Length: 407
Ligand code: SAM
Ligand code: DTB
Ligand code: SF4
Image (cartoon, rainbow, N blue to C red; front, side, top):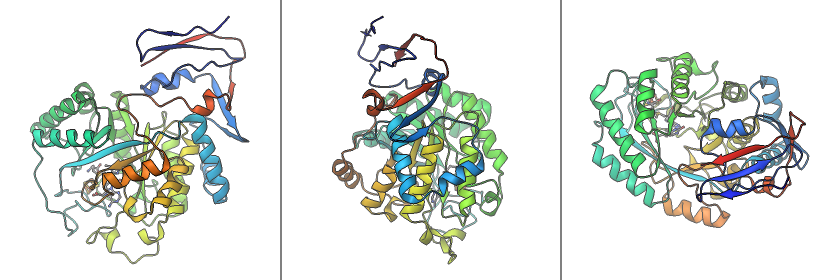
């Protein structure tokens, strides 16, 4: 039977796959990750250029460690190939952060400028007004950002009823602008997650930061388990999970592998994994340390190695090159994109610390040839897949037909 192609509205595309041969017609995959994953349910593995990859949830620490420890040139080749098998490498999402409630946090995260336990440059400020936040989101959209992420220096959303009401207004307002909306407000319960989802929240960021073993050396006021519970609440509410970590916390290689092991063995991989390089803030325990494992030792190769391993063990996850970009040259950042990063934070400020100016990033994108990712659209189908360069091994061998409606 000849492949049938219908285009009812520009965004709705129906294509047809057979187990023997795949006719990829759509430009983009569905935006909803579960829908996207369902499409590939019967996919066993992909291969290209001698590299094989698959979406797995049963990685062992040993397997991840083996990948992490590959010679750098082999690791980069493997990650870049995996990236091309699953993604269009020209698309890199630009997101913007805004600290809507800064400083005065009771937690003791030893990297953070906003904890009351550390004497830093941060001056605590009350929660921003809704209209100010919406204005910042409009500006972010103008500067090419397609996801707006609001951070609050809280241990948890807890019983902050009034603030939460305002946050829900912010989420609705930003969603109405057509931007993806993300929040990072500390711990959430199931009810709060559902309310955020109903208001239009796209994603929730809650990082594990490091391995379960190293975590208590960095934070003592809330447990790894607490973090996993919030992530589960976010997942259960149908919100996209953004969960990653930081390099430069005095961790060992085994801790970097340990973090990737936890993330890649979750029942569903996070849709987004931010990899941060510690921004060493004076006055914080980690900012003041003369320790050999401090930021001085997180170089571009460490970042690229972490990003590459994340790309290989979670092929369909967006890996976000997050804090710390000011410490890296453009060529070093390119190495991290080549390793599989496909998102950055733009704008001259992260939450409290500096980030490259938007026009500097735009020049970098122009030099490399990257374009931004539109909001609320699924990833582009990988050009390598479309060109038939990717061999896709299916679990089922009978000829099957699937109609796919991509939004
Ligand atoms: N208070 C909320 C929380 O901790 O979940 C949300 C805001 S918190 C600042 C968000 C994340 O930013 C942290 O989990 C951490 O991974 C990252 N972060 C904070 N300070 C950082 C720093 N100095 N360098 C790199 N990443 C940092
Ligand atoms: C994430 O992983 N990194 C962002 C975002 N999620 C919230 C935060 C980076 C904060 C860097 C330090 C600061 O600016 O205070
Ligand atoms: Fe508070 Fe979040 Fe900073 Fe920890 S990382 S001190 S919870 S603002």
